[in-house]
Length: 448
Image (cartoon, rainbow, N blue to C red; front, side):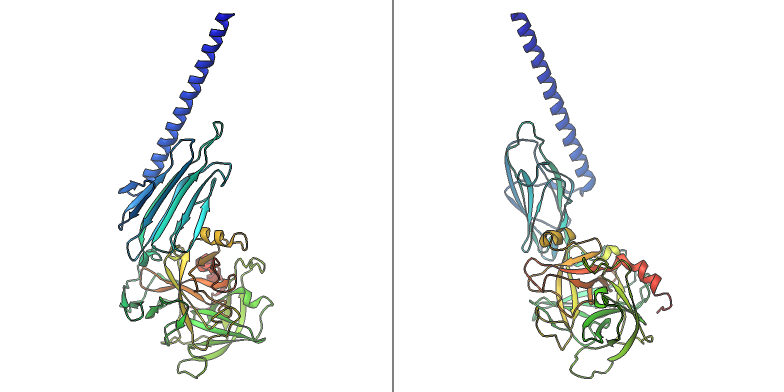
């Protein structure tokens, strides 16, 4: 009987040792896999980030973040600061935290404006709205039978003025940016008049000298600064904005025509509505084409084409905007939205065209901020800057960014938001590059 007990104990011990070997082998394979992923996804000069350290990063520098395979509780907090004029990108090619959810394990990402929490198998791919990111991994002690989570993430630096310029941009133009210290604004000027040959529709699109506002709220635009901006007045009194993309076509929001086409007056070359300005005029719209998949409840595919009664002649105050390529819609960096809408929620409309600089954010951050209040789809692009936003009457107007070839490109159409400039409530725009084929198919009779 004693010999049998010894044999059984030896057998049990052998089984336990075998299981321990298998576990260590699995952990080793997992670590090798993570290292392999890290090498494939990261630049050559990456460094491993440590807990409780603030890293002041340089351009081209990158950090890797990962976790240990321990089952003990963990709190690891790291801060990353980008150099002036730069932003931070944060992405996780491997992200599999504890399957039991956020109460067991989570990754918390904060910057100056936003906070996001990622758990289980969330997709982590975002850009900072400012120059710093705080990243914290929190894990409770894991029971012996439960699996530990793992992640491999990287933090990289990107220049702010390149956030929207990842396209090929072979238009043969350059742009210079100067700073006016008196009003903390930057001015972008296209320095070569050469036409871009690879832009949709009009080769002379998106050319303007624009001062990017850096003050809180909006400010008056300069005359002729946004020559593609149009005003739209519907017969029942409603007002929207729009963007001229061809001599006879304006891009606007579908929700402006929820009840179908109605008599519409379009104002072109306008700036100050209280006076008659040289170069401004009005004409009637002939028809509207609303996207067939427009959803009036979710506002998905909120885009429409307004056909003018006759083609317009381009001038210094009336000119088309370029349509952004998919790669030219940034996840961070500064864009500009314009319009004559109200300057506050349920306030009065503006007399002079207003411009406001807003910060692009990723759709992941946008979804988290709205927290199921709205569905943010891949057909949308979001911005969030405290006290800065489009508002009522701006619907259909442009959201623009500067591309690599110096042109200004239309990245979004003003769609919706929760009131205006409300805390934790981004502005939502229709993502224009998703509709280029549809625009081409529905505007075949008009070329520049």
